[in-house]
Every structure is written in C-alpha cells, then in structure tokens.
Length: 578
Image (cartoon, rainbow, N blue to C red):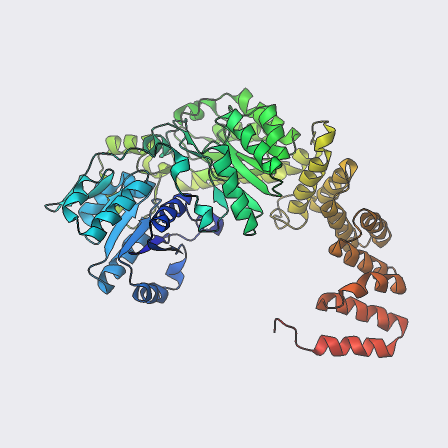
C-alpha cells in the first residue's frame, strides 16, 4: 500500500524554528517497520507547509496515498486536522490515522469532532499501525476493532480496543537508519519521572525500556556513514542506567566513530564516571530540567531532587568539559518576584552556559491539566478552539500576562549579565587524557561569544574579551585548530596584526595542512605588508574567489600589473554558483 506519514504544521510561528522542525523519532520507526513489510512509505516534514499551502493539494494529488498517518504532538493537531480535510476532499476513500502523544490523550475528542479522522493509534504506534494496514490491505474490516491500541468509531461513537502491549524487545524493530537519515536518536523509551507538567508518565507509565548498546551504536554508525556527524540524544533521561550509558560510550570509542552529541539528563542521575565516558565518546552538551530555584515550586511540579543535587550536577558537568544547559519554567503556581529571584540566585550558583526559559503550559495528559479540568469544570472541548496550548497563568487569578512576561525578562537578563562571571570561574578537571577535549570545549564555547548564538546578544558584556580568554585558555590545554583560528581572526578584527600573525604561524606549525589557518595567516601577512610571504600562503587557494581578492591586493601592492590584471579577469568570470 502507498502510505504517507506526515508531521503537520503548528499554528504559531516560533522565534527558534528548531523547536518544531525536527521530526519525532517514532515516525521513523513506524516507517521502517512498514518498509520492512514491503509497503511504499514516504515521510513528509510539513512543519512549515502552511507557508506554501498550494503544495498540500499538489503533493496529495501526486502521491494518491491509500493511508495517511499524522504525527501529532499536540500543538500541531490543527495542522493535521486541516490537512486531513484537504486529503478527504481529494480522495474520499483515503484512510486517515492520527497518532502520537497529542492524539493519544485526545482520541475521543478527535474522533467525536472531526469526521475526516478514521482512526487514532494510542501509545506506541509501530505494531498497531502495521496491523491496521494488514487489515485494510486484506479486506478484513471486521477485524479492525480488535486491533490493540486502536481507537475508531462504532455506531458513530468513539471506542477503543484493549491497549496494545508494548514491544517486548525494542531491538526487534528494524533499524530506521537503514532506510532514513536523521540526527535525533534514542537509547530508551520512557522516563521514571512523574513531573506534573509532562505527559510522559501517562504515556509510558513511568517504565523505561532500552535498546541494546549494540543496536543503538549501530544506528549511530549507519547514520555517520551517511554524513551525520552530530547527534541529538533525545531520551527523556539518557543516564537513567549508568552501566548502559558507559557501554554505549565504550562502543562508540571502540568503533572509532568521530561524532559529537548532546543529551538530556536529570541532576540526580549523573556522576563523574558517567561524565568521563560521555565526554570521551563525544558528548558536548547535557541539558537538565532545573525548572525553578524555589523548592516549593519544584515540589508543586513534582521535581524530587534537591538544590544540592542541582549544584553538584552542574559543577561536575562543567568540570568534565561538557556544556551544561538549564531548563527553567516560570509562571508556575505560587510564582512571584521572590521565587524568580530564587531562580536567579540558583542560576548564579550553578553557572550554566546555556539556559532555556519556558512559560508553564497546560497540555492534555498532564497532572496539571487534570487539576485545571476539575477546578474549572471544563472538558476536552476546549481544544475545539484553534489554540496550541493553555498557559497556566491564564487560569490563575494571582498571575497576569504582563507580570509573567516581566518574570521572563528578569530571568533572561540575569543569565546574560552573569555569563562573563560564569566564564571567568571555569575550573576543569585535571586529567591529562581529557586535555585535548578541554581545548575543544573551551574553543566551542569561545565561538558562541565570537561568532555564534551569543555574539548578537547585546545584553552580554565584553564578548570579544570573553572569546579571547576562552581561546587562550583552550590553547593552554592543547593545540586546537578552532582555538587558533578563532583567536587569529579575533585579533585581526581588533587590528592586532602582529599578534595575529604570531598565533597563526604557531597554528600552521601544528596543523600545516589546515586550509583556513593558512588562509588566515596569509591575510595577516597581507595586513602587515609582507606581500610575498602572504602570496605563499594564499596562492594554493586561488580558486576561491574571496582568496583571489586578497591575492589581487598583494599584486597591486607589489606593483605587478600583469598578474593583477589576470586576477581581475578571473574575478570577472562567472563563478560555478552563478
């Protein structure tokens, strides 16, 4: 059968589009199982298709699918509903299936109110979706109501079969990396946490299942062969089983995978041994859900760890040369300027190098949403409005929009203002086999202030000085090409050409075949009027139009009209990209 799996668009535009453009990993596992059983499957990442609405009809008319499956997180449910309506208009016989965490918690609502949706897959989707396909393909419509985990209409009313049994061994699922290319991967399914703002406890029932380390690392290896060098480990809590994590890290090293990756963890599930192996195996960032500096608010959110555990986790993570990132939630029950100040004080102590601040949302399937429904006597029909979510403060008479937005400004301002102090207080573990990785960490961090995310943030003071400090600190541990290059360019921008030349000359002694270092050294020599020496560095790269302009400057300065004319002629020729 021809199957389309669609990740639909969201209603609201995002400042950071990366928050919504990534396909959930589950869609790849569903597609891989269908492929393995001989079906024609195509995945469409339509997170932004609303900007090109004409393409929706064009694509559906062209592909003429038998079945369309929609991956619904919750905030993109209206995108799925809209596209399903169009699909039904084009082909009234098409089978439309919703799945994912958002559909799981609103299955009755969706089937009761949107006639274009035929089925909803609840929970883990691979086996249920495949069994539905088999029934449809073989004409066994009478067997469909018995498919475990499938909801549908019977006599016009939403009904659901018995829950599907979880996949007993995750390794029995076909490896999606054999069929598709992606960056987001998971070792686990589920989370032991019971956070009141999260849908995971109800979806996974606080049970954690694992792929084997061999299966997971094979996935990384297959994707790495396809050119993926950086991965996002999107487990709810990657480090829930320390020995499994160490086994994964050892396998990455044994197989010689030259990769980097970032993960999510809990502050009470981290230790020095895990951090050592994670860093050795390529981990460059760990995100932790801190949520609030107020212990009272953390208890309301059911975050059971202590302030001491938060402080220890961030300190250790940074000491092992891994960028620590903190998630904070504000606009919570009982939030006040005092509780926000507690979050700011905690932030100053834990010194994260990344921070994300969210306003507390209410979503179906969470404990906070259940409390909201009981208190206000509302039903799931509230989601008939074209909204993505409900902000908690909209339900709390003690909070208002302007107040909560001011809390967010306070948190962001404090983070940016304190970043220089976080940088100056860096203290990395003294372990010689980690020195090259320390240099890598410090040079990456320097780049964020120099050319990366923080470079454009006006609220962060003294960014060039911070970058130079970090580049030099990196080089104090180990020669690092990124540190040499970043420092050299930074010095060039500051007009410190003698120092830039000296740094870059040392760099090319360590890395003689590094093209950007040689080009940058050539530019420094040009700036110092050492034109013949500059040409020695630049001429090997004369096919680069930007470098050719520097070569032209050298010939003009030397008074070589003939070679300067050749350079001008070459620059006037159309480039291959024109």
